[in-house]
Structure formats: structure tokens, C-alpha cells
Length: 376
Ligand SMILES: Cc1ncc(COP(=O)(O)O)c(C=O)c1O
Image (cartoon, rainbow, N blue to C red):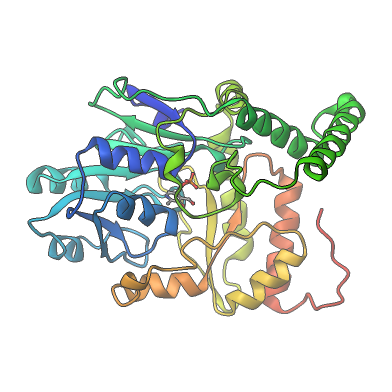
């Protein structure tokens, strides 16, 4: 089972965006440098570049999500220092050609494995061809915080990591317990856990009444609270102990197989539906999907209808940077029309059948406002 953790040098930090900023800084990227980045992106991929004073230069992607190499070549300049290679949704880019390109142009290659924690390409584990790679641990593991910065060649041990602090660690533990309770995970312990959490809420509310709200409280990285901005206060800080414990003790072996199975169920169930198009019907060997991307004509309507039924639809790239808007028609199209459906390892065959049924109904026009359908 291959993953980004096969890289020899690994730092466990608080988020993917912090790992990206640390990779760029370690590579010597600074003010005035240019960093090549896909026009199809999210804000948290761009803010670390600007925070370093560097300039993002956006390149095009093709319909199959692969990098447009001709456009990439045309975006090189004397100021180009680094290339960010994003393995969208878990589909590996051609890292072998990209490695050759970077070597020839003396550009640092950073693999963005935020969507591709697992898998391999051409026999190489994800993240092990670039000079650096980053991962967003929260996207694959049930943790409060977490990112990885890895490198195949650079020893990262010289980067000292500070502690996130006791309050953040406690918040991390409580958050994971809350989520576990939501999904009935503590088993026979559920009642005592619920009681302890209710007590914590009482104490917390009383403390807030007594001491008032402190606006400056900054106990969690933005990524852990669903924010897309970049807060440099979380640079050079290690993952919290509770998150690290869960991360280190999660049984990894089944994850790629289950994710691939769930993806294939989505492909089979949504093939030839009206007003929609599957981006990748075939899973390349070694690919471990994060989500299932589906191009939908009436994306806003369908997303809103399915979210109401409890389906966790993701819309990566929904907000494209103003500078990138005129660069790549494919990225703009995907920003408006691409919905990503879950294929998470915890979804069993009946969950997937239910999910496929909901998508089919929404696209075939079978689920109206008063259908009475509820989430499983
Ligand atoms: C492709 C990509 N790279 C980087 C990141 C940043 O990861 P994090 O949210 O862990 O900071 C994200 C977040 O969604 C992402 O989608």
C-alpha cells in the first residue's frame, strides 16, 4: 500500500497550506519570485505563495485534469522558481514528464497531494518524485488538524517544530470525540462520552459568561474550522497529539481498495445520466480517489437539492482567484459545473447504493421539494 508517507523525510504539521508555505520557504522561494500554480485551485493553495511575497502564475489544465504542458512551458520566465503539481481528486499527474521539465528548467517541483494521500504513479509513491510534497491529513483521516510536508531528498529535521499548545490539543481531542459521537462510534461508552461533552459545554458557556468572549482567541488553525485563509501563526507548529495519535494508529491497508470500489460504484451508477458527464470513468492503476468528480449542467440546483438530503458535496475550485479567471476556460467551466461526491472508506456498499440512488433521482428529475427523502 503506497502513500506520501513512503518519502524518507516527513514533518507532521497542522495543515496542508502551512506545509505548502514551509515547502516554498525551504526551497528558497521569496519576494519577487514566480510560482507556477494551476488555474483550477482553491484559495488555500494561493495564499501561502502571496504570504511569502512571491507571485502566483496560473497555468491551464486539460479536460482530463492533466496539466497543459504547452501552456506550462509558455508561462516560464526568469523569475520562475517553483511548480506546484496538484493531483486533483487523487488522479496522478504525469510526474515523470514533469520531473524532466523541472530538471531542465531548474524549477523546484512541489507535489500537492492534498487530494492524493495514497497511491502511486509509474511505480513511484505519491509525493516521491517532486522535490517536496504536501498532504492535507484531515481529508483522509478523522482528525482535527493535520498536514504533512515531505521530501525525497532534503532533510527536514533542521526545521524546528513548536507545540500547538495545551488548549489546541484539548480542543482537538474534544472535537474528535464530538464527531465520533455524532457517528455513534464510542459504542457502549456513548452515554458517558455524551455526558462528559455536555458537562464540558456547560463549563465552557459559564466561563464565557464569566470572562466574556476574547476576540483574540486563536486556538485552532483556520483549516480545522473550515476556513480557507492562511494564518502564519500556525507555521512551524506540529500536529496536535490527539490528531497524531489517530493518524498513527489508523489501519491504512483497506483504504485504497474501499475508495476505489466506492468510486467504481459511482461510475457505474451515474453513467449516461442526462445533463452530466463523468470526468474519469477509468481509475488509473495506482490511483486512490479522494472524491468522484461529476460535471453537472445545473450544478447549483443539483448541489443544493442533494445537500438538503445530507450528502456531503464538495466544490473544489468554486472560487477562482481574480488573476486566474481569464487564463483557463476549462478551469472556469469546472469551477461552475464540477460537483465532487464522497467515496470515503467508511461508506459501505449500502451507503453507496443510497448515494447513487439520490444522484440518479436528482439528475433524472425524480426528487422534488416534498419527496420526503432523508439522509441515511
Ligand atoms: C489541492 C489542495 N491543496 C492544498 C490544500 C490546503 O490544505 P489544508 O486545508 O489542509 O490547508 C487544499 C485544501 O482544500 C487543497 O484542496
